[in-house]
Image 1 (cartoon, rainbow, N blue to C red):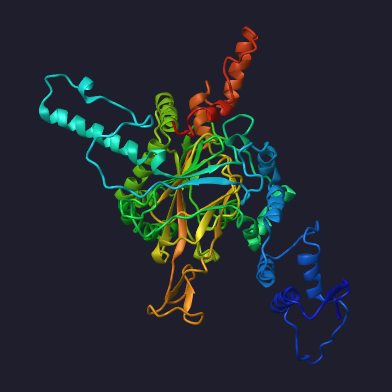
Image 2 (image 1 turned 180 degrees about the horizontal axis):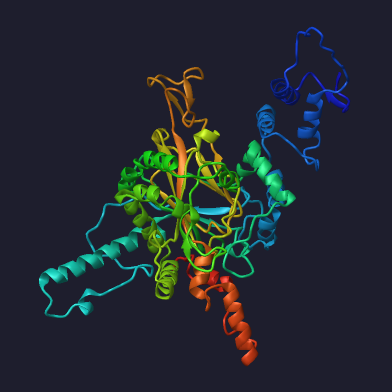
Length: 566
């Protein structure tokens, strides 16, 4: 047996773990094999490989922790093992524990499986195969506004007007059937409640993630890839046949993710044919935007989502006396105008339509907020229902080749609200549109695939979320359609000279909490409203506030903003 340094770590037959650590140390700290003239060497029993082995394997939770993500990934590959469900469950409750323990403490329902197969068990319902379209008019659901053309039109209306109104009603009926929950692929949680998600005491926004030790451990495990051992036991939501567009036989329907009370907390659209075409020009447009805008190095490095390029267009009232455009938008307005062409405006309209169709009550709430701000301040949102828009793109000059977001919360966003995400690519799309970078909803225990052309909605202020790379090693491709062998095949998601893939990027529509505050508060700011309340209480004290400065998020969760199927 050989002793590694002075740390007392026993190395038996140079195990794969020790070999992986030593290989990393040899690469990082190469030894001089030939003594130079006049060089003096001081030898000691200290072995840096032993120190690295101790820090990464023996004492991974040392308070002076400085593990290297690259070494951790090597160790993970060298070990070739993954955690059991029990181990993953313990780790899941210990990482960012303030966000997960509350949900885990919830009493198990009588109908729940006492030994679930995943961290957060889900009941999955897949709709039956699509049947031929019928010409018969179908009943409306409660989610789409109903207008009877006969009562809305006088008897003297022309036949043309009557047919036009009838067609409009039919279109609403078809939309109602198309977006009903019966037509969706539904993942219903049996161990996750939206009520367990953390909301600020004011009710307006989410809660900052902070830098507690368990959160820091989550960051490190994400950086090293060890988080995949936990994620492997979550509910995966793949997008079936992403090369097929909506209406094709076998195409993926829209996907609903519901909590244990059936609230719709996540929704992924199907693949509309028009969106496939509209997304294609976004890569070159994003490259032009990056080149023509200025993003300070300080801002980029302080971005809690990652080191990629990002931009925040639109307006807010964060730490301001009035709603104004962001500094980034003001400084780069000319570049934004060039970027915001007719194609982007059509995509923007689609993003708002998705919310209106799937979350009609929330859309009505948003429109009320927007109308109130227009009446009070004469301002309108620039992005349909939304006040903000972000382009995430690669930043090659800083060595960032794609957008893979680290664990984060958009805590400044409105709590009872949704963001809309669209994925695009700079360069070639993945073969078959098989997206390899998936999105994790941590508290919900969901890992969802979002390919190019579909939109995803979720409350980004409430759920901890991040990207992970999921490599599909079972599906392979060959150069000339040959019989696949280990020598001539590559994983479908791998990037080679023959099977190239560009850089994954994303766009996000969102609204910050300060916008909702500006609409709902009696005064222009929280401080001004508090002053008004103090003066009113001084004149006539009462328990009930005259001018509330908080939002009742609990009642909002009980409302149909995250709709429950009727």
